Image 1 (cartoon, rainbow, N blue to C red):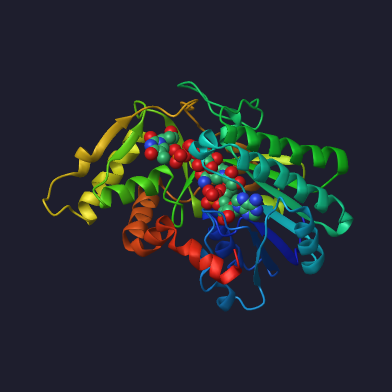
Image 2 (tube, protein in one colour):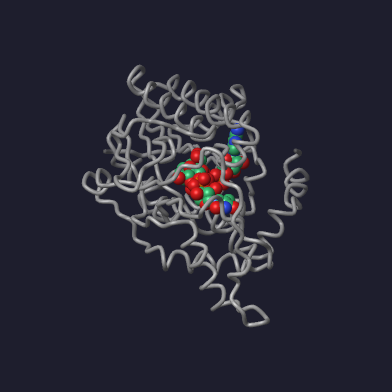
Length: 354
Ligand code: NAD
Ligand code: DAU
């Protein structure tokens, strides 16, 4: 496929995966275009995640603060920057928040995606690719056996996964109905640097370092598949370049693990690299709490389609990826402090007029 994107809109580029993707893509020799990062900067969006990028890549990176739910703003950005491709990350991403307050999930994840699709289809042949980042959670929950394939029926169980499922269906429909050149990926739980510390791994690392309780939902035996964020970035770029238009690809890390096992692995690494003053293990910080409502029991991914068709497979093992991630959080405590204190939010408002 001969794809030469000149002006790629990356939505949600100040979040966890989006910021890793932007840094990854600028380093690829087969991408010579410009990235227009469109992010409204919710609590999860932090321009500090891309510090130095504009300077390192002069003329290759632009940041625009805008909400994908604002159709007029999106039209303006499309016209002003001559957008000819989209890699769409922007979304509300945390399941617990969707249970407490689902409304922003409906707006950003469904209406926001719809706006982008509508504008993209109006660009005709000038538009090369709409890549939509989705989740394995749209498939629901697995029993002890089996894997999610691209053919698994959708059975979302949380407001978050239902909103992502709706956006996936819209993407599919815009390909079938209007011939929009789309690709879609459904991936498992990402981990790595710059993840907002409300998600399992960074939350447990920081709480453990701060001697705070480590809340395990239910019996701790829920299973997730873990994908190192850089492996995910490579999968996305591979699909954008060579994936068949209109197709969906599952992306997984081949690392199915129970939550309690992960927490124990984290504590073992921390006890080794940052031992407690009293020399004791941090196991006593673990507490079992009330389960998440509608908590999916097990996710596991069959990514053989992506492996066979495009030759992608994960490079990082969970053991090495987890150690790197823990070291990053233990070293970048100032980043986590700022993100959690809301201090950076004030800084953002001063910088960008929030
Ligand atoms: P994140 O919460 O870290 O970042 C989301 C980003 O989107 C933030 O920068 C936020 O400011 C921005 N955003 C939110 N609403 C917006 C709006 N209306 N307009 C413009 N920007 C907006 O999320 P993440 O973990 O990086 O996830 C990125 C994407 O990948 C999401 O679509 C998510 O559903 C999907 N995904 C994530 C995972 C995971 O494990 N993190 C796994 C599968 C799929
Ligand atoms: O599977 C992909 C999905 O992974 C993405 O689509 C979501 O955007 C992303 O947030 C993630 O969803 P999860 O709900 O799986 O991630 P979370 O880190 O919130 O939880 C992982 C598991 O750990 C889950 O079984 C709930 C459990 N958990 C989580 C937290 C925050 C706990 O036991 N205690 C906690 O404090």
